[in-house]
Length: 299
Image 1 (cartoon, rainbow, N blue to C red):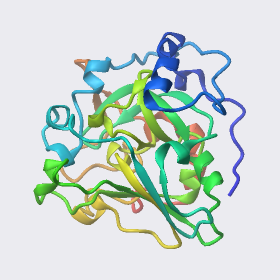
Image 2 (cartoon, rainbow, N blue to C red):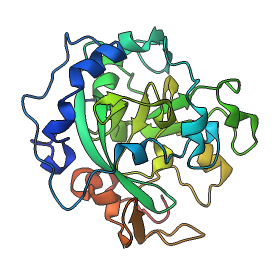
Image 3 (cartoon, helix red, strand yellow):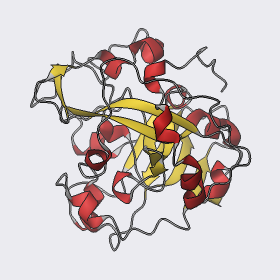
């Protein structure tokens, strides 16, 4: 299950130093101890022409259908979600299975800060500084078996707390999944914070999946179950609209959505559209995962 990590993460993927100011306060608030966390020795400067999307935009313009289909509804309706204590159940072909408190699940895994471009299938995008852990570090800790080829993530099912689940917009609970080699890639995160602060409920608190080379629908939120499987699982949007939402969900300007092109995107806060980059600009890091695969047939 081990994969080689790149010699360095590009500077453009690392959160700027100013965003670390509230780090220790956040760790205390989040209930995460400093013991065992490998804090970065230094912060690297933000690079390229990308600018961070403001915190108030990141936390008020969201896709989280469990709290409503309008972009402003999650921020309005998610405040009552109880995120402490939080249990995650680990199932499937894995050695360390069972239900465990989130703090214990993450204990001893180094915390990382990564700033990623994030692209929605609806052709809008943000640039967000995340805090969390590398998903691959958790997978190594859980010790999956040799038959595990996929990792599935299930969101909380609780219509009393998540009023959007009373609707028939999707089949609940929300389920997403990655191939095991994708999940082991060092760019794949389980996120617990944003902008150096605890992850707000509307952004998927207390823990969500963040995979920057894929469209946003791949990022399951408020995760309560992680399951290791031998065969490819069915995922929520792929079930709801398979012609629009493929299992891979990779950002690809050459594969149009049936109702609009994916060649351009609008960065929130900008007037003009910009070209969509292959794998959202992470082709050098993740392109080898799809060598020889027809990405128009496997979208």
